Amino acid sequence: MNMFGREIILSRRLAGSWLFALMFFALFATVCAIALGGQRGAMAPIANALLWLAMILSVLLAAGPAWQASMPSGFAEQLYLSGKSFAIFTAMKALTMWLTVILPLIALSYPLATMFGLESKAALGATLSLLVGSPAILAYAMVAGAATLRLAQGGVVIILISLPLLVPTLIFGLSFAQSFEVSGFNTDGLALLGISCLSVAASIPAIAAILQVIMEDG
Figure 1 (cartoon, rainbow, N blue to C red):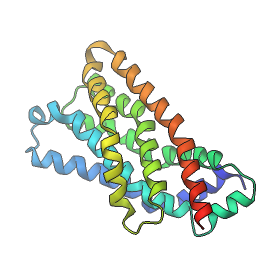
Figure 2: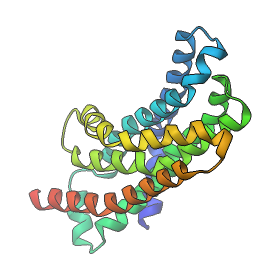
Figure 3: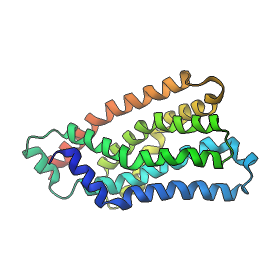
């Protein structure tokens, strides 16, 4: 069985990981809407910020369980002895997580954006910003998840490690979402796309190196 097929099967068995992320995303948005009194006029100005925070926290909380399921005791050693690349495994893991964890969140973001009072084009901008920025969110979550594989409270550490690194992504993501209704896919969108591409390119060898260290430490 190839690596991608293995990860897909694991994601089905670990339905709680992506389902928890989806439920957290929806509940976070709902609680925020209730806290703001359900007034669309009050929610719309901060809708993009709330959606981005919900997305980031949902992905970070799902990263730990997803890594734990993929890396049982001795798996790194087996992968190394089989001659398979840690980088290829990481890429397959990232693709699986994007499809099973992030894609459902993006699909849910548009109706939530309209619930927050955004017009159709503004809601589309919010959704598109999450789509473009999602590879960067996933990249940092995966690096932190790999680095905390052997920690009992890895989920909390993942959030503490990743949040400061995600500040540039958050800044450009919010700027792009807020300006999309007027200027479409602008320079902020290009900058966000660049951040995502660079984050993915840097994270794969970084995670491969982390897994190599795990293997050597036994």
